[in-house]
Image (cartoon, rainbow, N blue to C red; front, side):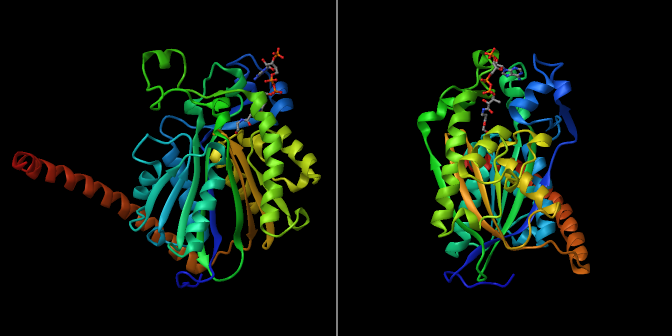
Length: 384
Ligand code: UT7
């Protein structure tokens, strides 16, 4: 993509995309041996057949790194080109450091800033909006956004009303600035904190720090009023789609596909009815992944792109809702095709070398810090 001077008419184009999921699959049949449920109930009420579940070594950062590397491959750019990394997640590695900083280190994205974004299942739409507007403002040119979740680690595996719903996975986009019209066109972001109690992890934050009682009562896991969230979701999905097309000066007739947050097939069906649109305009893969929160939209989009369902110049709406409560929608012209050339193979080898260098550089930095601390740390403290 051409280098665009700052401050002129700029558009944010999605030029790379990629996903990652854990190795292990948990089927409904297996779940029915863990809690009082059936494959039939889960399929009829949610549309979910299976979900991916992380093992002890697979974390939000490790899945995010895999998805990011795949997105950098599609975009055919170096991690050194990244100006910013945003990770949308409700299951960060820690309160701090941010998962985005850990991923920045693993990628060796030495010129990038990094931060996490907490907007629950709407996180990817929020991240896409923020990234595109930073690019459109001219202050940065290349931004990596990642939706990555290991919800299995904060699910109450004894609560059948929630544990059947969630799964783990990650998806990433690379966005770049260009003068060519297209890419991310417009967004709507909304929140209603009065509904915060409907979907939350009660303990582990400043309101209720983790303690013996919170662990005993499972308050560090997801609690949800499913019916209320369902009612809220069916209303806001349709509203957000209408608002975003109207802000773009378009109508729903201009839209080719809607990529909704994958929480429940019945919610998506209700949104389709409400909008009077055919269900085949809605990209769905919840049957394979369950609800992966901030990762669900890129996981659905990437699958539809690799199946050749989504074609260049299709207009897409990404629409999501979730804890907060939050909801939002983004309208995008999908104006890229994946190409492979000899040049790309060479660049991929170069990226792999850079990832190895990043590992070594990170280890050297840690080592240097330890040595500096040992040599000068006590002296400096004594001076003060
Ligand atoms: O990403 C955003 C986060 N979450 C959501 O979007 C979730 C939104 N809500 C939903 O998708 C649905 O409300 C659920 C799938 C969570 C539940 O479906 P529902 O049709 O609203 O069921 P319900 O909560 O009204 O429960 C119906 C019955 C209850 O039994 P009784 O009281 O009628 O005897 C539940 O105890 O189903 C029972 N039930 C189950 N039965 C078998 C609840 N969970 C299960 C289960 N297996 N896993």
